[in-house]
Length: 490
Image (tube, rainbow, N blue to C red):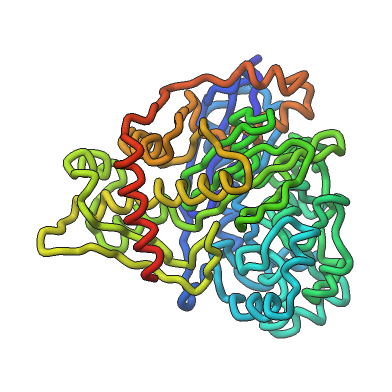
């Protein structure tokens, strides 16, 4: 009998089911994209039913392909796009509105009004977050106030709120479990990360009934038994973490000062700060990295809204490329000093700028500019934004000098070499780049008793390739200064 851990990785543009061996190696994987909806400028929505269908489909495909009669799934982990907000009926499970995605900026004016009232310091002191449309609370409030009858139904206790992990858990367990973990709770603007509980003052501030909220659990915990998961029925969900925290866990960044950066739809640089939630003076976020046995470990995080999504735009929007794999040879043909800067502020700018009203732009175009320069500028924009985060962390007193990277973009060797060059730091790509899903599997495995300690998990991490900086500081500073000037022109 072969034993596995199954990870559900529900992302912004696709859902994946990945079957891991107990050694952390991938045994089978299936992925399915689902539609993105853009009802208005700066608005981004998903159909929750499409998400649920994609999760059921990918889980069913993996189980059918890889699990025979003697094989056993010991536990299931869930990792998810964070902050994305769903409200649904407690009896029927039917969503009352589309999921409002983390990228959505429709509540920017409301957030600005709260900041003008001087409330950001209060919110930050409790949550470690800034007041921004990115987080769940203002999305919940928007649904309550703009969908007919929803606030009244919520006040009567008829509705449930969840980030995507909670929604999937509810569906998988047939409505038996309305739970989340501390990492996802910490991204709502409603959770006190110091007291580790929902905060009544914040609920009152945003006008959100407490009856909507899920129970907050450890990241490795008994979340519930699957009843509506087809071949997974009878399995237990034992691990849940938001995607960036799951990646930190999968990269085994368990020591203070260790950092990882994930390059998916967005880019998220997270640095372990141990049992202390550091207050950033440069608009980074303090958040829960993971919680085990009731004890939280914290992280400092910089969030970039558009990374891989910029390459997707070059492919689907401008149609400059047919596939992301074409970007690496194009960049290799292009001088680094080509003079073009692409600022992909399609839904505003994240850390350290936090400008929800910024919009994308391309600077430095000349008659000589062609496809390869624009594509290369798109790749470089991801690295320049990471440099922004590194500089902010450095000003806060902690400079990541070694970065473990993961996500879809890290298969591009050109990007990782340029990243090492522009950061002036070593960049390590692990042998298993699906570290988000791996982190969820590790959490489930910890709870199942497959792994006895974090040290045991650390021993499973392997480096596939290391990228050392080879660019001079003068060259690096000159390229980055061009980026800073481009940002200043928005």
